Length: 155
Image 1 (cartoon, rainbow, N blue to C red):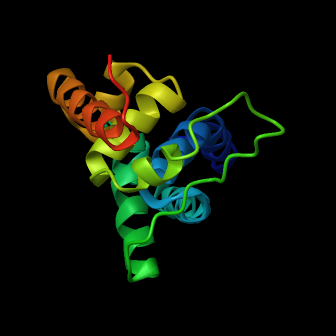
Image 2: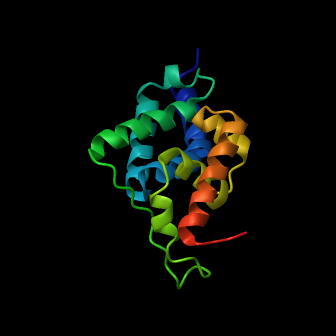
């Protein structure tokens, strides 16, 4: 049986490893502000239910679904606001990109952002979302195609 100190230490390690990726995924789903709030809520839930959460095969995937659902309920309307692009801090970025990303269907937006904005692998994305790699690839291809069409990009 683990002591309270050992459980707390295991939870701290879990949060350190899980929080950045969970925040990225929830931000891709809910927008940056709600994504951060949903991450905090999901991790608070994980602490309250740590005995059960730590035994799960995919605790970060579970917390992603939990955070996304709670974030949606808290918002009561689906308006996704991604972080604005600060031209002084970034290389040139297509001005219509944020609007085009916001208009993608949620799954496609999440997959495109995790793969191409946050540089996740197909396997990491699939594991978090509980999808196969081929499904992730399909969402990515469809999402990129829609982005290209909206932005008038030809390859």
